[in-house]
Image (spheres, rainbow, N blue to C red):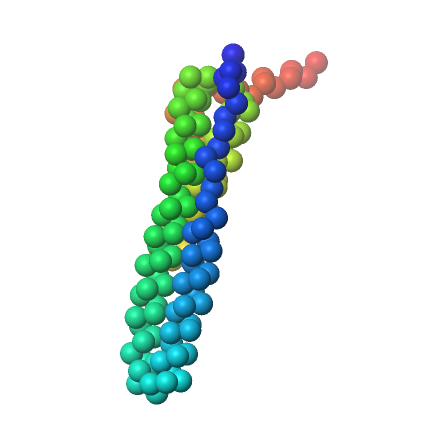
Length: 139
């Protein structure tokens, strides 16, 4: 039997993306201001500080973006443990898992959470139950 209440996703905040854009503008502005008013050496000293500030801001914001998606993913897997045969719930867990995987990556840009890991989580949560219909026999 499917869940009585529909699965509601946690709202995603828009401010992390806006903060990353603002940090980019501030970093570029700081370097340009240092070059304009202080000369080459001040600009050269300001550049690494601006890059570090931007990287820390981006890391903080991506962490804030990942948290609600991961919470939704865990909640979908929890519901899947209760209702292992629910195909719609499996598709929802897969969709949220893909969204979470798109927010996780290592320094080389490759996702750290792969499609295989998502499928393994879903299979484990549903008890390995195959919900596909059996293949039709040819006469």
